[in-house]
Length: 277
Image (cartoon, rainbow, N blue to C red; front, top):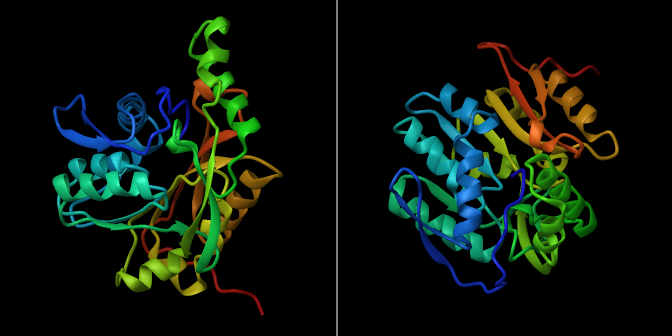
């Protein structure tokens, strides 16, 4: 997720209750972070537009679900969705599982990272900024993106250093990994109406884990992309080769960071072009 996610001084793994602005109660790691995550989900932008396009009965694969706020927003927007939500960190996964059980009992929570192959990888968990945790966490880059975001939102410079201090102090852990294709097979998904990706610099690995036979079942992709080493262009070209029309945007509050929003749509009936031999 974009922006600043953590403002709590405690790095404890305990969870808390929080009442969303819509009156529904959820379980979270930090109420302050949950408030920001909810605002990012429902404000006009990537996830709100994706939610507006969902129809009853659609299938959503939420990669990097964190505590499940975006999954919940999708489920409340369109009834009878089939949702598979994937999150690797134990603490955030416990919140995800509790929130889906309470509000979307038909949804499935999977504790795993998503990569280009099944196995195990090192994952860096930020207790004070859980939404920025990931396989490729970079404390210096994450601190700088947060500083820019705070300046763009009008936070006085005197406060920025205090807010950012130790925000991205990470804890390394080993987590299981699966691929998108593994998930499609394991859950018997005949189609994926929406593939949502928010994995903090691992978005290219998520897409690398889509096998050729599964590209045609994916109808819509929304992703946060860190444009490092030409990654945004590479991902755009990959999706275009698979028959998607790609739109890239950047929220004004993120101007000057490497964070972009990508939305890829496939016209009905358009299939992935055959591979040349």
